[in-house]
Structure formats: C-alpha cells, structure tokens
Length: 442
Image (cartoon, rainbow, N blue to C red; front, side):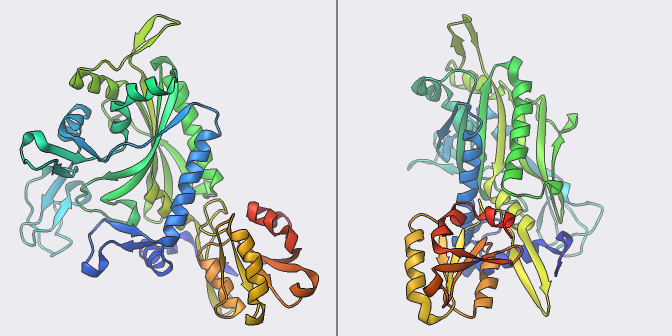
C-alpha cells in the first residue's frame, strides 16, 4: 500500500472532491456562479461545526476569562473611518487595455503579457477598496452609507465598554467571536483559500501594555497547540514572525501560523499585537471615553489588544489538504480522508452485512444516533461501503453480521489501518466517545 504525496494533491483535485462528496459547491452554480463565493454542503457544514467546537474548547481550556460575542455584519461609514479601513483597506488594481481583465498589480509582472489574452497593454496601477459598500434605509445619501464588515474585530472594539460593564470582568480578559466577513477581492483564487464571503474565528485579548508581550507569546503557543490537537501534521505548520516592513502601522509584533500547501507556505492564522490603536481611534472619532479605571491602582488607561484571527473556511481547506490521501491497494485506489476524530463529520458508520440483518443493526444504530453523529449504510457490498466511509473521513465502521445474533458482538474497523477487531455490542459506546482508542488496540 502506497500513499500519493502531498505535492500530487492539487487544489483542483480537492475542489472536485469537495463537490463530489458534498463539502462545498460553487454558489449559484446553476446560474453561472459567483467567483469567490461558495456554499458549504452537508459534509462541509458538519466539519466546520466541529472546527468551531474545537476552537471554542481550546479557548475555554486555558482557564482565562473569555466572553462570547456576536457583532452585526453592517456598520456605518463612521466606524470604518475610525478604524482606517475606508482609507487604507485597499489592493493595487490594474486592467488589461485589450481584454479588460482585471488583476492585482502585485500578482503580475507588468512587463509580461496578459495571462488572459496574451497581449501586453496595461492601465496605470490604482488603489481598489476591498469593502462592500451599501446604503441603509430608503434614502441614498452620505448619511445612509454603510459597509459590510471586512473583519469581525471592530464590532468588539466599539462594544468594549458595553461588554465590560455588563459582565463584571476586569483586565485582562478576552472576547471571542465567530462570524461572517466580506471582502471584494480583485482576484479571489485557490478555492476556499481566498473568498469574497468567509467566516472568521477571532479573539481579542485586552490587557495592560506592559503585559502585552507576555500574552502575545502565550497566545502564539496556545494557537500552535490547537492545530496539533486537531490532528494537523506538525511538520507542515510553522510560526513566522513578520519582518519590520510587513507590520501594520499599529503593530509592534505580529506572527502568522502558516501551513505548507502544495502552492507554498501560506497564512492560516494571524496573531497580532495591535497596541491600543483600535480603542484609541474609536474613542477619538466617537467622542466616547473607552478608557478603563482601576480602583486598586487609581489608574486610568486604554487597554492594549492581542488578536488571534483564523478564517474558518481556510481552516476547512487546510484540514482537507492535510487529511486527503490516495492509497494504492492491489488493483484499486482508495481515497481516504484521515481527519482527526474530533473534526470528522461522522464518528462512525453502522453496517449490516446483509439485508436480513438490517432490523437488528438499525436498533443498535437508533440507540446511539441520539447522542452521536453517525451513519447507517446499507447500499452496496461491504467493501464499497467501507470505501464510501473512508472517503468522507468516518473513523470507525461497526459491522453487524450473522454471528452478531449469537455472540452479541460486532466487528469494528479502523479507517486508517483498515484493521478490524471483534468487540461486544455493550462496548460500542466507549469507541464512539473516543474513536482514537482503537489505534492503541490494533
């Protein structure tokens, strides 16, 4: 049995696989689709739900004060003026004068020919704001201008005082948010990697400036541990500190968690020390005092922030690249998604060996379906059913055969090794609670 290497797992192969098994589809595909916008199918939704669950669990496990939050998608122009987005959230844009195709100027060599039509005739480079602009209400004037948020962080900053006063928390504490963001990318590309509509999982950690470096280092270590715990290959994960010329004007230090995709090392998560820029700006533009007063020290100050921000859809793509394998077994190729059991869409599948055994097998399945994400599969040969479950990442298969009627046992099969073991039906729940335990038993 041999595995196809990562370099052979292309973005096109993953995109095709996602459509075939129901992880992601081109949005509005029957009408021609929207470039850079995808709908997440049933299987992808289950994986994303598990990724969110593991992200939240990782935040809760450190024992720190972290509050949940959901901000609105729309915000008035004044919010984005204060944050600097209306002025600075831009990419360089250039058009081909012949075919009118648009490119990010930093993605092309302007001394070369257009990759769309083969000619070489370019417009001057100009700046293109990435935010989606709209109007709120019936009137269309300057006062009605609003934007879809390009990041989730600002809604936390403008609600900082509300959050703090209504939850009786003290500095340091964090606010965690999962939600949609929108960026009108010039050239969205690489499937789920760069999208116009995407989801972020983000935490803003508020602390004193003197403690910021300590917490920045803490969160860097915590975030690396998160990726290890969800089963990502640690040899393909690295923490890269930004060079001085990469840093945002408000950041003293930023690091990216990067993953080695077939198309190179790319950012998976940004961990940034933002100083007190955001709260200072919103205090200045709104006229509201966003400082904190500490009775113990008689001190008033504007808190500093360490931010950890992941794109959920990009993380979904990452775990797919990391888990997808093709194995040659005799004369056939087995496609297997070796997801960690914590993020696999289904924990197990229950398979009656023949139609005569469907009824007793389904009774067992129905008992566990109330508590676990599992499947019941009766279509095709047992071999085909194993392959179907391997392809969607199901860690375990429980096969009910004719012997099960007598010995009250089933055969449990491990997805990765394909090894099998006979266990008592009464022991099934233990494997569903911890599907990884079988690896130590085979």
